[in-house]
Image 1 (cartoon, helix red, strand yellow):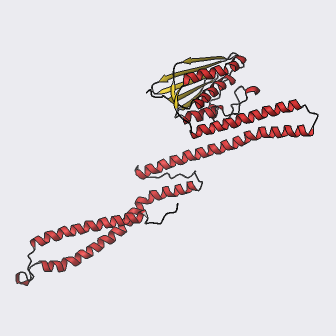
Image 2 (cartoon, helix red, strand yellow; image 1 turned 90 degrees about the horizontal axis):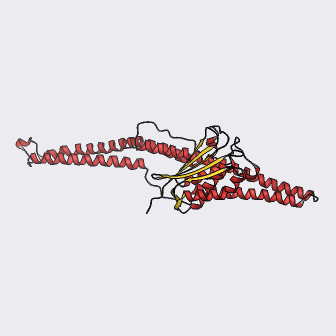
Image 3 (cartoon, one colour; image 1 turned 45 degrees about the vertical axis):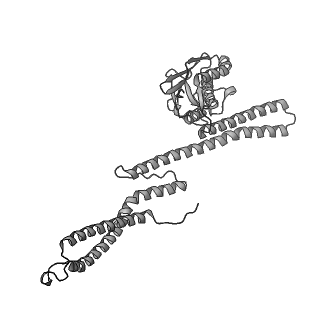
Length: 361
């Protein structure tokens, strides 16, 4: 919305300084004048025509007072302009940085020097905001690039299958349909996962009291056939753990963690333990699984979109779309919680989720 141009802040401060100095000078002169009048006789001639009187005082004092006031006003304008410029110099730096950020340059930092004051606090807060924005934009760009790559793969496979079927009419039709169905199902799963991840990042959901222990039991019941098929022991323990959030998103979070623990486990004879508890004002969910040892440098990357640990055991029937832990992190962040991933010394992973407890009413 266009606005009319007005006086700059520097000019306003300059006029304020000059006006304040002029008023203070006028008051001082008025006080001096008042005290002088009290002790000077009102006699135009005075004693022998040479003694001080109000007439002489007016003739000599007023011109000097006018010169002093003019000097104070000029001094206030010049000094106020200089002082205002020095005071507003940090704000100019912040404005320049904001303008550069608006033009797309998020790598610039103010790094204001000097002692801690209001401008320094604003500068530090602005630098911190730029760092977060730069990191978020880089993450979004990387996510968009990975998402486009992941979506391109099933589409390219589908096109290849259709081209082969068109050029080779003798090819088994049922086989082509089955492969197209599998590729299409994977593309749908990936799209739904992307939508769910986006929903968690936006935080647009209705909050309600949720018990994580019930969600853990529901997720374990759903994934029990998969665990039994792989020979994995799935155990759910713990008590009530209430949180405030979306039941749908939190259920997907728990399900992803349990499925991740089952899929990335030992070939046979592994275990998955799901535990819930309340600690003060925090509800805790732990999902621990056996498996191969994870390099420490690999663990921080597991929550990034489309990052699949190469050291982890995967199978074709549950290859996933590379968004399991990324969705978990997004849901946890949207619920103001924390997510910790710790590699177990004997192999496998311990995932700990901490969410704020819903206050009882």
